[in-house]
Amino acid sequence: MKLKLFVHRLSQPSRAVLIFCKLNKIEFEEVQIDLSKGEHLSPEFKEINPMHKVPAMEVDGGFKLFESHAILRFLACASPGVADHWYPADLFKRAEINSVLDWHHANLRHGSAGLVFHSKLAPLFGLPSDVQAAAECEKVLLASLAKIESFWLKEEEQFLLGNSKPSIADLSLVCETMQLEALDEKVRQRLLDPHEKVRKWVDDTRNAMQPYFGEIHGVLFQLKDKLKEMESDE
Amino acid sequence: MKLKLYADRMSQPSRAVLIFCRVNGIDFDEVKVDISKRQQLTPEFAEINPMKKVPAIVDGRFKLFESHAILQYLASAFPGVADHWYPADLFKRAKINSVLDWHHSNLRRGAAPLVLNKALAPALGLPLNPKAAAEAEIILSASLAKIESFWLKGNGRFLLGSLQPSIADLSLVCEIMQLEVLDDKVRARILGPHKKVIKWIDDTRNATQPHFDEMHAILFKAKEKLLKMHSDAGSDQTESSRKPALPSKI
Image 1 (tube, each protein chain N blue to C red):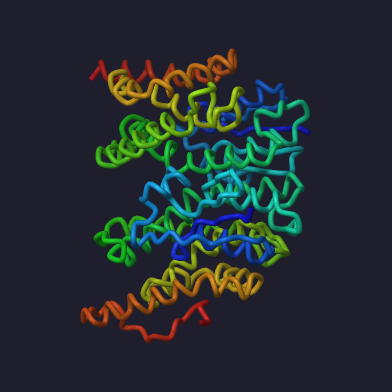
Image 2 (cartoon, rainbow over the protein chains, first blue to last red):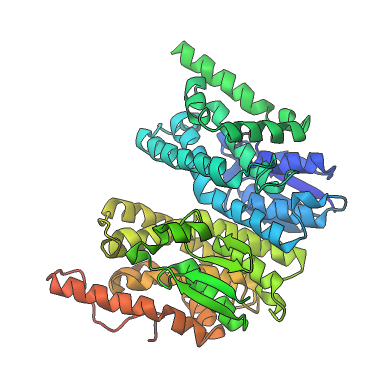
């Protein structure tokens, strides 16, 4: 299976797919699609994903797939040697992972990605910051973090749903949470400080996925420094 | 112990799960959670689903919410569910997963807020919000265009060129059916340009009768009620005739 991944490391779902493949020794070719240069809008990329989004994948020059959760599920099932805990064969465990992946879209993703985009990243794409949109997304983010703290993370174990080992849900949601690094440190702390379990879970997931987690998130920390520089120049 | 399904037939994802169970002969008890009476906010229901949303299921001691996760679980866990609903083939399954995921941030994000902010809000004790409705309509129209041009490509009558319906068809069609509560002219304006979409809604409906119409009956009652409310209020919102112009044949 010759796998091509079309990604941008500033895209949270792209990072989740990249880390998953590296951890599971799935061979792939990384094709970088630079969103800040509008490469996702090119006719060539439209052939890969008509929704113009990353990540997307192509197998053996034929089968194409987009939507990071669909990609993670496919790779977990189709690649040899992927340990069961990533996407268990047990129907009950699998269903629970599916439910948190679904919940993620309209909750953590909507809140976190929206807040970071509308308050920080929009100018990088030549768009104005939208204070009202950012405020609405922050509300959704706070509610989502509270739900992860009180419900999705159980007392007993390190990972989502009370699992002792990480699943594709931990990968997806933690990569999303990492995007908050692009915010001012004070803002990020204000958002995350009340959630002790969430902070520990981010750490535990990170540790379980080194060195790839740190490597793939390198660009995000570079962006963080760049944004700090830009703001102190102003 | 029989499967328990907590649902409100006014909820699009509730209807998808209800229809799926009926079509596949899955035995279940339907427990009505009336959103208009805020029954989803009771402490009892929070025990079932702490996110306070429908649908949710209880299968023995196992609880589950999120309609796509429920549909995927039921398709896999219950014997006798035909393969086409959620194929075992990993490639076909992956494509169905991708349209289900796409749905969250696209069709659902457009259709649901449009209907809520343009029509249903008062029934839930909320104000109408024309600005939110207008923003939602943009997302909805873009989503319908994507279904028309991309998701319905291929030989078959259903999403992804399939010859038979999958859980994706059921989920997305139930979402679009919610537009029935809108003024006929508005609905015709939004759906009219998308001929393949209109046909696909009919095909999905026909493939799941009589359960489709049974589960959607409440929607048509709500439409009648809203029409009556508007004409009582003397509003000029419903200049169109009472006879629906598009898919609904009830």
